[in-house]
Picture 1 (spheres, rainbow, N blue to C red):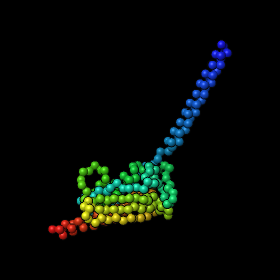
Picture 2 (cartoon, rainbow, N blue to C red):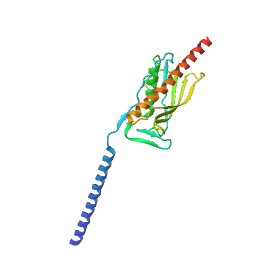
Picture 3 (cartoon, rainbow, N blue to C red):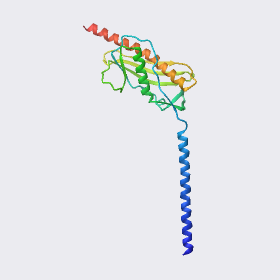
Length: 219
């Protein structure tokens, strides 16, 4: 009986020691994973509105629709380069908001700056006004291109709410500088978006002029 008790005690101690060893190993693993995941805090970036030439003659209300973004670009981390076959993501730099939301708000701000007589707002903003025109964008490239320069490739569409009116649609490819940092890249991206808004503002003015001409003709 004493021998049996000793064997049971030894077995119990061995099982307890295995359990404690396993628990210690899991604790070390959890600590390691936490340390790896925490890392350095990322820097958050946002697209900015860039100045342009103020013009008159745009529609009264303009809505910038939430753009369509190529799935490879739609990430929290900033895509710093797109060679056509491979995407490079920043390890420490991230967007402060979704890229689609940032583009729509920056583009709305750009167009509003260029058409001060128009009320321009982004889709899903807290407004209840029926727009007179829509600006839509489908973005396929928005990062450093194969040349090393910042590249924006997108399809821009500008149309009136009246579907009987003609609308504008064109694929645009814009190229900027060869940035050496994430901050310079985001600045170039903002400038290219401003250039695209120059085209959008021009087309909105033409749309408004065409609508005014139609109203005069119908009278």
